[in-house]
Amino acid sequence: MVRIAVLGCGRIGRMHAENIAAHPRAELAGVFDVVDAAASSVAATLNATKFASAAEVFGSPEVDAVLIATSTPTHADFIEEAVAAGKPTLCEKPIDLSLARVAACADAIKGTTVPIMLGFVRRFDKGHSGVRQAIEAGQIGELHQVTITSRDPGMAPDAYIETSGGIFRDMTIHDFDMARFIVGEEFKTVNAVGARLVDPVLMERCDDYDTVTVVLTTASGKQCVISNSRRAVYGYDQRVEAFGSEGMAISENQSDGNTRLYAAAYTDQKAPLLNFFIERYAQAFSSEIDAFVEVVEKGAPVPVGFHDGQKALALAEAAILSVREGRPIALSEVE
Ligand SMILES: NC(=O)c1ccc[n+]([C@@H]2O[C@H](COP(=O)([O-])OP(=O)(O)OC[C@H]3O[C@@H](n4cnc5c(N)ncnc54)[C@H](O)[C@@H]3O)[C@@H](O)[C@H]2O)c1
Image (cartoon, rainbow, N blue to C red; front, top):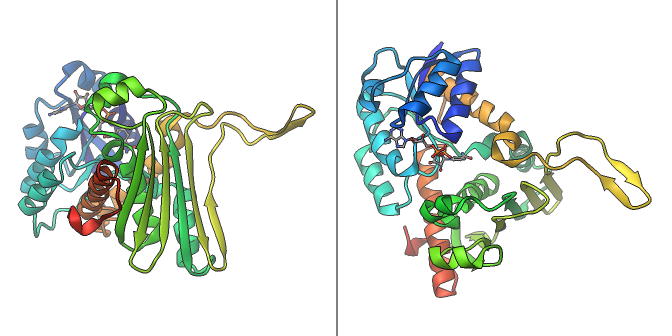
C-alpha cells in the first residue's frame, strides 16, 4: 500500500482524501490543514491521522508520498519541501500565479529524481484522452485544428475571483494544458481576447474578464481555439474536438443519465449536464490517483509534471499580455 498524506482539507483536498482512502493500493497516511476544523472533519470522517504541521508530514517515515491541495500561494514552497524530504508529490494546479516564482522553484528542485506530478486532472478524463489516442492512432489523419470549450456553470464567489489571479491563470490554465496534451506540439503564438459580459462590475474591479477566446498556433501551423465563460446557464460545458485530414474526434459533455426524450415541443432533450468539476471529472480524479500510485509504487514515468505546469502558466501570461496589448504574442516574449 502506498501511504499518501494530504495537505489542505478544503473543497478539493477532502475529495482527494476520500479517493485515496477508497483506493485499493493506497492508504490515507493522514491529513493536515492550517484550519484545524477542516483537518479534524476529514480525519474523523475517514478515520485518518491528523498531523500537527506540514513539517511533521514531510518528516514522517509513515508517509510515502504527499498530495498538495492547499491554497495556490503555498504550492511552490511545499514542492520545494517535498523534494528536500524526498517525498513523491502530486500537487494541485497551478504551481503558482507568478511565472518568476515557478522559475525559482524549478531552479530549486533542478536535477531532482523525486517525482513531482501536477494535478491537470482533465488529461485523465476518458473522453478527452480518447481524442488524443485517436490522433496518436492516426484515426483522424494529420491534425489540423483543435477546439476546446470550457464554461463554468456559474460565477464563482467574489472573494474567489478577487484572489484567483484572473481567468487565464485560474481557469484557462486547464485548457492550455489540454491544448498541449491534445496537439502534442508546443505553441509558438497566443492571440487572446477578453470581455466583461457576465459580471462587468466585478470584472472591472478585479481587472479581469469573464468571457475569453484564445487562438494558439504551432510552428507547423496547427491551430487551437479555446472558448471560456464563467457562466453557462445550462451547466458545466466541457468539450474537446480535434479535426484532421481524415476525420474528427469529439469528447462530448456528460449528462446525469443517458435517456433522450423527443416530443412535440422539443427534440433530443436530456437530463442536465453533470454539475461542476467534482461530478464531471469524478472518473478523472480517481484515475489521477491511480496514475500517482503507479508513479510512487512502480516508478512509472510522471504522466504530467512540473514542466507542464510551467508551460501552461507561460501560455496564460502570453494570453494576458495579448489582451492587454491587443496583438498576438510569441511565447518567446514571456518565457
Ligand atoms: N484540478 C482542479 O480541477 C482543481 C479544482 C479546484 C481547485 N484546484 C486547486 O486546488 C487548490 C485548493 O483549492 P480548493 O478549492 O480546495 O480551495 P479551499 O480554499 O477550499 O481549500 C484550501 C485549503 O488549504 C488550507 N491551507 C491553506 N494554506 C495552508 C497551509 N499552509 N498548510 C495547510 N493547509 C493550508 C486552507 O485552510 C483550506 O482548507 C487550489 O490551488 C486550486 O487552484 C484544482
